[in-house]
Length: 412
Image (cartoon, rainbow, N blue to C red):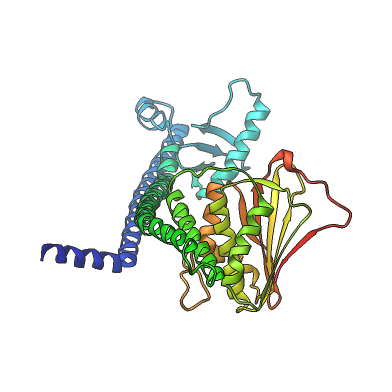
């Protein structure tokens, strides 16, 4: 009963995942805007306080200009105490006659100082209205403390946002890594469980080859033997997932030839398949079982796109020392350009009963294990699609390109 309740709670959590995300997002927005609102209130209060200080300073300066006796209190407690708010006093002609709290270089000349004060005056006029004296105007702007406080919540939110994005990325990556470990463990266990019956099937195949029924059923037994060998290869592929496969020089033309030879009798007879290349001796750094898996998945995807009728052409080209290109072209329904990347997403499929994992697996094998690339090179609606596989080449296998062009091999 306890486990049942835990399962129900887990199911509810999964089902309400999007709601929880939105709830967290709304709470974060409320906290963020609340912080901005509260800080802006403080900024407005400080603005009013600084304005009152400047008004008091203006009155003190005006009083000091009229009375010259007993001004120690005004000078010390009002005028000298303003050590943070930038202030410029100008005459009736807008000429600076006095200033405070404006940072200037001591080595500046009088004309240079006057020019800087005029620039500061422009900024002050843009911020606040001046405070009038009898024969002068007092301009000011926010102190550094007030300016810092004004932008503090935005800086704070930016830091929180960056931290949140990094935390999400790390969490998401760890989650993906954990899922990969689970799937890798599952595939290895599946391969291990298949090992015993496959070994038994191989023994039975040897028995049939030596039995009296061999001559009468030779072709059938040979095809059965191919399927058993294929099953063993599939288990090897599953065993390779989650561990570093052996990548070594292999003849690409030969590997593709073997993959197509096995696939040919197992797909529609209305599909024509052919392999083209400048040479039969083009080597690349691959893992043979995994690369054959890629060829099969892309070709099966092509067969589905053509609805079991059309032509699949595989062109193998090595144009430089670094790379080998394997282009797989079909005459299927094609796709729009905005679908080029989506076809590799897990679960993406146009078939009712498809899992949408074939191309995803192909991309994972080529880019994750072979350090190559696989992508849609070209596609046109109603005419077909070309997938390109980029493999790391082997320097010694650069073929000499013959004038007659492609070596052609057809699988009818």
